[in-house]
Length: 367
Image (tube, rainbow, N blue to C red; front, side, top):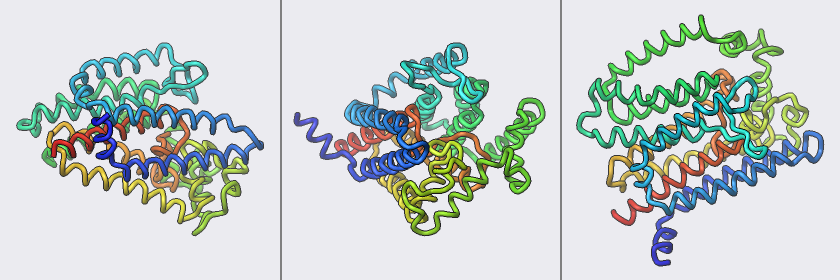
């Protein structure tokens, strides 16, 4: 009991509050979308409530369980992630052309969401255990090779968005580790070459059209650029205070597809306006700020690498999703953390916060 009191006393309640308010924002908008589309189909809203409850339980579980257990089990977690990503290719369900979900009792479990956490744990362990030599070319290549299976297995689902996200996690961790800029120049050139090869030999026409709409959005509004065009209309029409919950024309009249997943930010902007979207940015800023402040008291390399990796993942997902909503990036199916509908995404994000909380708690106790 004394240990529990100490943990609760050192729990970062400001960080948790920002996360909880984002969850509430998402729930409110999912409810708004559900009631406006056919009147009373609250199935997705009810599912999201269940996902959030499960996620919050896991958040507190991981907040009070020593994160060193994950560090010491990283090899088994890595093999498990590879096994699940391989198994989903054989036994998984195909949704919208991507074979990336296990169907368990009517609920879709997407293993790649948990593979992101495993990759960050793995890279944090790798770099923290090689603190002196982490800037060598050899360590860069090894870190890339251990990241490659997760990226490749995700890419062939095919889930291009999540594969790119896993690749960006690796790049971000390299930057955090302090590798020389020359390596990033070489990697950028290599990425361009791989991208060109994929464009010629691998990308389907619909994928090419999504990218081309960035340069000619007015020419494909009714085809590949339809979703992006409707999202931008929704964002712009909200103005300062928004149209009000349940009164967003783009979302409520079904002009905006995937409103509760990929385009939840557009719905928030339309119904709650600049003020609502501004609050979303504020809550994300609080999360990032509280973690950066806590890093100063973390007394081990693994904890620092892990927290920075998780912050990088949250920021990259936020940046890509919002950029999709305002037409800066092509639509690649990346959820907005804590807001978008989806059980795997919500649960994985809350597990990440739980682990961060545990690192913060232990750093305060041992500071």
